[in-house]
Amino acid sequence: MDKQFIRIFNLYKNDIYRLAYSYTKNISDSDDITQNTFIKLYSHIDILDNQDQDIKKWLVKVTINECKTFLLSSWKKKIIAFTEKEENTFSTSLPNNELLEAILQLPRKYRTIIFLYYYENYKIKEISEILNISVTNIQTILSRARKKLKEILKEA
Image 1 (tube, rainbow, N blue to C red):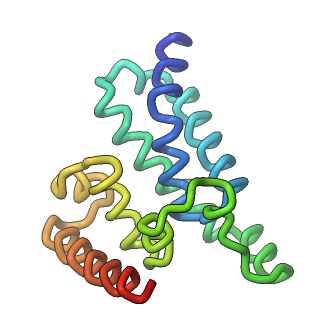
Image 2: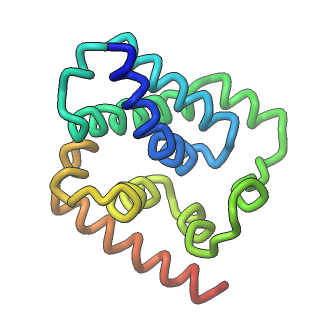
């Protein structure tokens, strides 16, 4: 079972990290959330009996929940209260990419759906199942996100 866990970890660690980063916009917080997600996977080892696609969906759901919990935590609120607005570390630590920087400027609900649709190649129905949002809502949010991205990219 440890070999299966390591295989899944190596297969999905980057995807989970990018999803966490799309929420937090912070490398350290994304590392912590990614770590917590895989710790939860290890503690629910029976999940590894599923197909890879189902494991990935489970990991995405857990990651989103971990991000939401982190962002609502009193620790995060206290840190923000004592520090200035965090700098966007994305452009200094990863290759400069105008589209990714524009995506990071979107509101969180748009970023998540854009990430799942374009970067993780989930279908709208699958995103609907993962986020527990209706298919129509996903389509609407995706359409609005595209319009906002277009506006951001025109300004740049």
